[in-house]
Structures are given as structure tokens and as C-alpha cells.
Length: 165
Image (tube, rainbow, N blue to C red):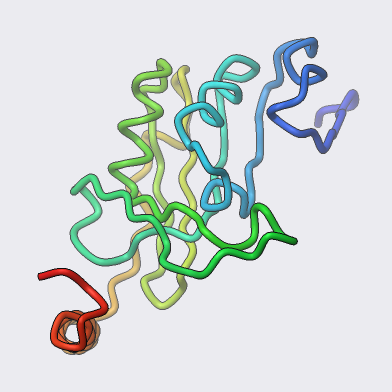
């Protein structure tokens, strides 16, 4: 058991973060889909750790191995800078960004009934990366229904003039 555990909540864009020593693990919960620039956020994190756990509102349509990034179409809330527009990234999109920063090991945890996903990424080898990903499947009927619903919503938006064709 670790006796010298130190836990800190920090703003990754602050100069305080860059002055810190290296961390064994960074836990990033619910922030990745709120940062205006995921590339710079991940670069800042990768400069202070070899291992990171992300929990984020991910992009759930398409295959996990296809790289997607989608910008939310919510309206702007000037009082809540990080609370309105945001990026939705697929697993593969996040992994692609992390690979540019030297991360090579990935472990995915996904339940398609939830809108959030978990990814553990590391620059070093570890036991968790020898395990198969924890991916629950929702079944073919549920997948068909959700994709059909999304398709029809897009068609309606095109014909109503709210989306360019």
C-alpha cells in the first residue's frame, strides 16, 4: 500500500501545473469534453504524467475504432464558459491525440447505455493493458433503433433548413 499518497486538484492551463514534479497518475473526469482545445489540454497533461485516466462524454455512434470528433451544437452561455459548447471524441480520436504525445498503451471501458466512456492511457507498460477492454454490447436491435433515430433527426434538420445538405 502506498503511504505517501498526494492528491491535487489543478487547472492544467495554470503555470502551477508546469512547475510540478511528475505525477504517477492524472485522473481527468468530466473535463475533456469541456475544453475548447483537446490537443493542448492533452499536451499539458502528458508533460506531467506517463499515465492518465479519462472519463468523458464520448461520441457514441460509429465503431470504437473509427476516429470521430464532433463539436456540440448547444447554444452559447456567456456566464458558463466551459459549460456549453464542447467536443465529443470517439475512443480512436482520443487515442490518436494521445499517441502524438507518446502514449502507447490503452484500456477502454464502455457501456453503450451510458453517454460517458473511460480510457486509461500510458506511456509505460502495465498489467491492465494485458487485459481485454471492458466493452459491453447493447445488442443489434438497440443499435439499429438508435442509428435509425439519429438518421431521421438529421433528415428532418436538412429539410427544415436547420442543416446544410
